[in-house]
Picture 1 (spheres, helix red, strand yellow):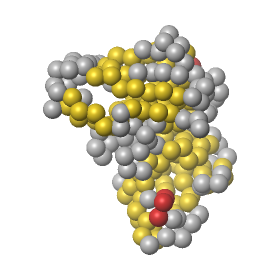
Picture 2: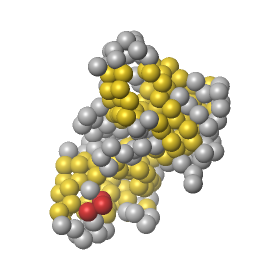
Picture 3: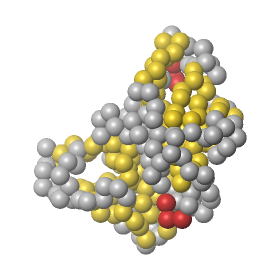
Picture 4: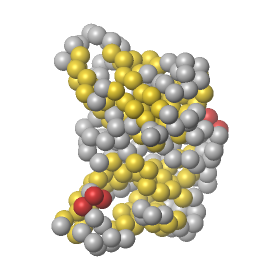
Length: 113
Length: 114
């Protein structure tokens, strides 16, 4: 199973942009890149996902490297509510593995007022 | 209001007792999942089900059992055979049959076994 590597922690000031990196050097052609975030004592929340092209939604942007071996989640203006653990996950949509996601430890984002 | 309900939020049991965690959804999603999370760790897949009356083992199924008699419900039983049952348990759902639909998570049940 393809794995991801993320920094254990990052910090940001409120209203500044945040770039959360993720390395996935063993990614296969069918792996989607998913990002989720988790607040303390809550279930993870879907943020964004993509395959090859950069993606934007109301929560964040996802920048995917041309070789797909890395990606970056971009929060354009961090707020205190964005403080959470962010998980970068590869999801293989082939065959029997459809729907399985493999969560690592993620990146703990601290946002300072 | 559509969503996933996990109950109870906190659960305490004595060692050697079986305990069943509830997961109910009204999102009309076909696929349901159970994950376990230990402090400072990511999520590990216990069991998943993509259709009623069918389920598959995940990566850490030993000591757990599930049933899927209804589309809305996917209860998880933590048996006395599970060596380290104290953990945060998360239920998730998604729309099956689509290539990349996201997971939707409940707010979890924190199980403590002493």
